[in-house]
Length: 331
Image (cartoon, rainbow, N blue to C red):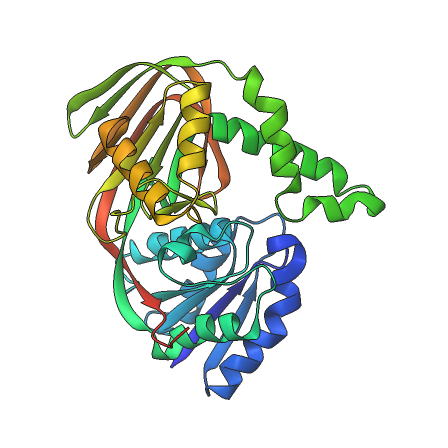
C-alpha cells in the first residue's frame, strides 16, 4: 500500500506539525509506504495536491491521508476531485481523515474522534483506518465547482468567522498573544461582538425546484455530514451517504440561540430528541439541489473556510462521490 500524507503544519495552532512524528511512527509500525506533502504558504493546498498526484502518476497512491482540520480535508478533497476530472487520472484514491483541527466536524460525523488532548489511543485509531478501515462512500456538496464534505453556511456564522480570522491575523503578529489564536477563544469573542449587530436579510430558499421558504433569515446551514461547528447536531438522522443535503434555516436572533442551545450534541438524550423534532417541524428540509437567493451579498463559508460573498448560491449534492476509510478498530 502506498499512501500520500498531506500535512497542514499550521492546523490546530501547530498541533498537526507537533503530532506528525507520532503519525509517521504509527504508519511505520504498520509497514505503510508513504510520501509526505507539507502545505506551503502562497500556493493553494488544492493546487499542491493536484501537482503531487499528477507528478506521481495514475494509480501511484492507494490512499490520500489528510492531517489537519476540516479546512485541510476540504481542500485536499478538492484537489483529488480536480485531479480525478482529468481523463488521464485513473481512479481517485480513497481518502483517510486524521483530524487535528479545531472543530473536526467531518471526522466526528464519521465516528473518528480525537479529543482535545489528542490521546495516543485516538490517534492510533485514526491512523489505523488507513490500513484496516472499512470502505465507505461519502457524498459531496458542490457550489461553483468547489466541493464540500461538511457544510456551506451563509449569514451570521460566516460573518463571525470573518471577524475571527481578522482578529487571528492581528494576534499572531504579537508574540505574547499568539496563544490566543489557538482553539475557540477568538471565535467566542467574535460571536459576542457580531451577534447583536447582525441584521436579518430577506431571502428565498428553493429546494429541488420548489420554493421552500421566503422571508427574513439570519443564517442558513447546508449540511452534508451530521456534526456542525464541532458541537452541534441539527439532525440525528442525517447520513453522509444518503444523497441528500440538510438545510437548516434560522429566522432571527432568538431562533438562532434557541436552536443552537438545543442542538448541542452532548445534551441529554431527551433534549436531543426534542431538538430533532423541533427542527423537523420548523426550518429544516432535505434535498438534492438547493438555491439561496438573498436581497444583498452575504458572506459564506465552506468547511470552516471563508468563501466568496454573493447574493445567489446554487448548491447540489454528488451522491457517493468519494471513497473514504472509516475506523474498524474498537474505541
